[in-house]
Length: 157
Image (tube, rainbow, N blue to C red):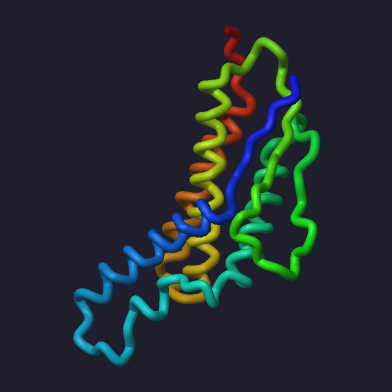
């Protein structure tokens, strides 16, 4: 059965902004020198969207790979030179007809969303604060494994 999972780039980037901003603020509160602001180093801004879009594309490709035999197709951005925050990326899956409920599909989508924003945060931290990158990469790996678990689940309704 043909099923679609939709992902809004703006929603994912907002979550990345919340993560990086929260981490930046938390560490900045303990700084003694405001000249070298941890917050300014790790928090994402609109100026970072080009780099974040590259990570977005890598994350989408990882979800395609993780979907394995259920993957059918996906929607690609028409013009990758422009960062479109209203972009909706669609991952199309061919799932067994009686296997997956709408609740299951929503759970899979939530895991995939969580993967995307933690993956992007991990990639961002690998540039701005490498000590945090491994922690977020582990979280991203857990989310994609959770997604794969949902994809491969064979619970009949």
